[in-house]
Length: 87
Image (cartoon, rainbow, N blue to C red; front, side):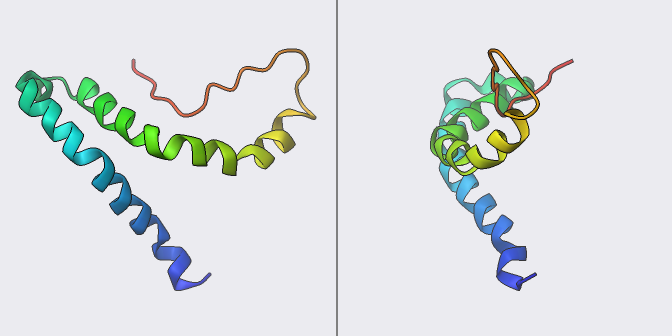
């Protein structure tokens, strides 16, 4: 594995924080009670993040999804995508 490939996750992480941090900070300034509700704060951050990253993830993962789903499913298949499970 190339060193650049190993550190590419850090570049993506930095880009994600750059995209979503300021809108999340503005949301906190607008409603400070978000600090007491971490799940809603997380959703706020991730909503801003997926606006930018969502289309690329779906496009880049299309071939993998077709290889996994097509031979193993029939009828209507609903691809929910990335999400968060709350208990």
